[in-house]
Amino acid sequence: MDAVIVFCAQYLFILVILLEFLAAFRLHGDTNDKVKFMAAIIVAGVIAFVLSRIAGRLYYDPRPFMRNPSIKPLFPHKPGNGFPSDHALLTGTLTAITYFYNRKYATIMLIPTLIIGVARVLARVHSPIDIAGGWVFGIMGAFAAYYLVNWAVTKPWGKSFEKKLVNLAQATPLVNRVM
Image 1 (cartoon, rainbow, N blue to C red):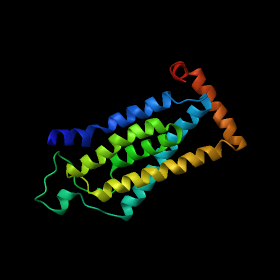
Image 2 (cartoon, rainbow, N blue to C red; image 1 turned 60 degrees about the vertical axis):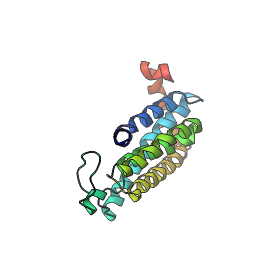
Image 3 (tube, rainbow, N blue to C red; image 1 turned 120 degrees about the vertical axis):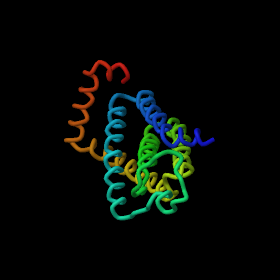
C-alpha cells in the first residue's frame, strides 16, 4: 500500500497535467475560446504561484517529520516549510481553471487532485493545512485569471492582443492542427 501512496504523492500530478492538455484540445468552441483558455491557464498559474509564495513567507508550517522525529516520510523529502503544498497548488489551479471552460474534464481532474492531496498527507510530507492552502490559492488564482482574461478581451487593446494570439496559433502548424 505504501508504494501506491508514494506513486500517487509523487507522480499522479502528471495525469492532471495530461488531462489539462486534453481538456484544452477537446474544448468546444472557436479558436478564440481556446486561446482564452490557454491564456487563463498561464495567468492562473502566475497568480497562484505568487499568492503561494507570499503565504509561505507569512505562515510557516514545518513538515510532519520535522515536528516529530519519530515520523518517517514514505519517500525522501527535504525539510522546510510545507505550506502550501506545491503539488496541491498545481493540481488545484489546473482543475479550477478547467472548471470554467470544460466542466466534464474538471470533474475528472478533481479525482486525482484529491487523491494527490490525501497521498501527500499519508506519505507524511505534508499536513492537511498545507494541502488545503495549496488548493485555496490555486482556486483563487483560477478565479482571478478567468475574470481577468475575460475582462481584458473586452478592452480594445485586449481584443487586438487576442487577435494576434489567434493568428499566431493558426500560423503554427502543430497548434493549428489541434485547434
